[in-house]
Image (cartoon, rainbow, N blue to C red; front, side, top):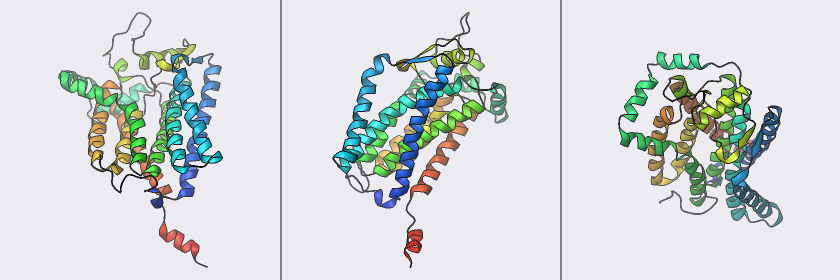
Length: 321
């Protein structure tokens, strides 16, 4: 894979304000810590506990990378190894903090507004059931969309690491920072505008006598809201935000920050375009969810770059006597 500017660490740092990059890093890390605290407080209030179970090795590996990063950044300074291990550790901790946080926030959602969101879809001319029939009518297209939708986790780890390898450490850091901030934005949106899964709303999924479907993202949401969930198994969590769509946010972030990866960016652009197209069906989302997610994703990229880019003219003025 060709990387513009050569393969070495530190290539893009000259284009960014180091002080503001560190500020954004601190905001991201504090946000992760706050998510963990609020998750345990919120779920504890609901008498619900989290089981780590089979994810224990993953948790310990994440802690190991964080500890190594602290060592290389503060005790035995090595900027290159510190950057690599910090990125890996933060990438591993991010799902541990953000996925349970969406559960805790969902448990405190207000009055459901699904009918409003569905009516906005119809106003825009989007018929969810017709779209589902079109996609599922072609098994090959349905399988392509399924793969595109479920490559989310792979891209989350791959793109920051590829950016780091290709000499774009600042943009690797911004990818994870925007990811965390995006989780906060969509979780707040889900609390303000709580909805149910589009599959459930449109009656395209079978429901048993207890009102459950066998799909975790739907059943977990229903159980949290009716108070019947007392244990959350970390390895069984999927993230249950409905409005806005975080897959749409992530698709914009992945596509936007992968533009620094040379010719490989075209593969990521195509892959994330397919992810967006797959989100209504395979994510159980409304078109409004996707559009709101796109707006948040693009807004985060624009805001992060505007905040952290160096301003030579401002620096020149500041240096004047």
